[in-house]
View 1 (cartoon, rainbow, N blue to C red):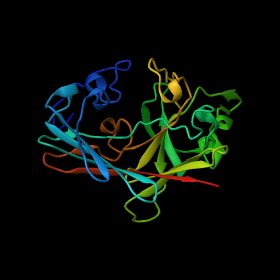
View 2 (view 1 turned 120 degrees about the vertical axis):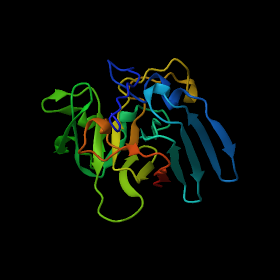
View 3 (view 1 turned 180 degrees about the vertical axis):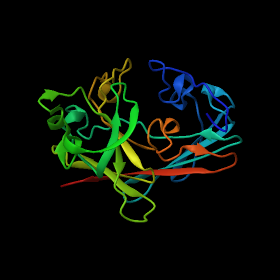
View 4 (view 1 turned 90 degrees about the horizontal axis):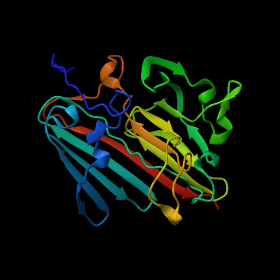
Length: 256
């Protein structure tokens, strides 16, 4: 509900809206513009698409620099008050496919996370990370907790913010065999760890592989999931004409 008006979003996940519903931007064709050191994608989402109000213009800029950093800038504006929460859903496997993503080492800079139901919807309760903390841990070692295995991670971590910097360290992923590492910094308040439990591809990817569960790991910087349903969460509402602007930075390196 926005300003007393109830909007019905497209259900695509057991009665809920996931990834923007069936009209999610992941299934849309973007316009693009290639510049000297960047690539920009743009999309117009018309009023009512997916059930969301407003004609929303989204632009996503990808830019590399000489420090092996990939900066993603998200900007959007709508002509009506609406909801916006954009992220990057790339699957990362720094072993170059020689083993699955659970063999990677992970650090998440968070002391607290969101409690969620079995359906992965937040309960609105913020809890300590406890045994779901990651401090240079092999992900597979965390898959057996509390005396029993867990099917995978689909958990939102609230990033520790101890300074006024524009971008805050969110997490670091590394692979012991290749020496590759990736640090993630962001302006968003948290990061969602998804271990690819439901990954099942029909088309071959890198090295002509068909990707299967746990072949890659997602580190999705974003606002709190289901924020419109929880007034205590940081707001994902943008007013008409208000600029939405958030950033994600991936910093790559190799330990020799």
